[in-house]
Length: 84
Image (cartoon, rainbow, N blue to C red):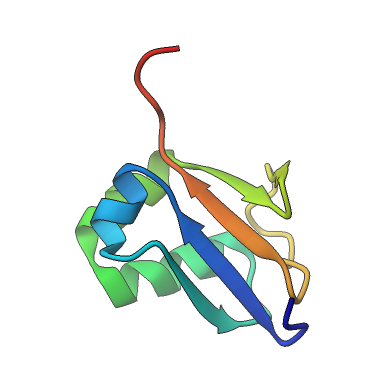
């Protein structure tokens, strides 16, 4: 874990929309900020996924999209899954 960066991991439709399984970004973001940056990097297709995705921060569901993300955290982007 790099304390100056965040690792973003993409799953299912998020992975397809981003065109990668993960990426590393500098620390200092909230989920809203991170979503805006990822949209700028990867476009509207990922933006649509991010609007409905759930986010895990170091394995814990994050509901406050404006709270600062801890440096060194791993952020999992989980789009809605079909089935059950």
